[in-house]
Length: 98
Image (cartoon, rainbow, N blue to C red; front, side, top):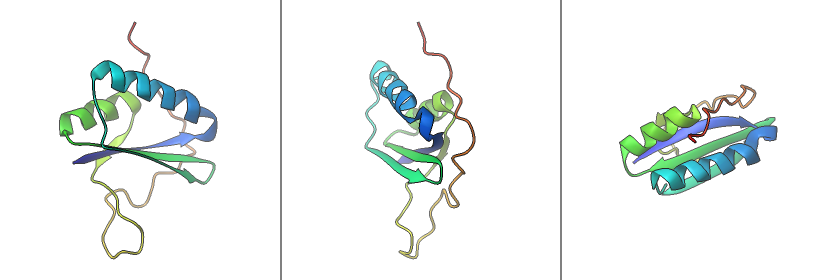
């Protein structure tokens, strides 16, 4: 399993989430987990895929980074994404295909 993580500004969240859903449907990709958490002035979004190729395509399209599923803080295991990227970086999307 591969996970894609990205940081989004609060003002971008609804638009980007809608773009993600459209893109996932067009690609016929079905994430196994879709996780979103408030982080500072924005949000961290993580999306898990069974296939690495799907995770790579999603990460490329939405400027995410690939890692492995994170674990709850304090359970003694290392989270592949720690520390979380700050959500104050602007999110850049690539234009939707026409």
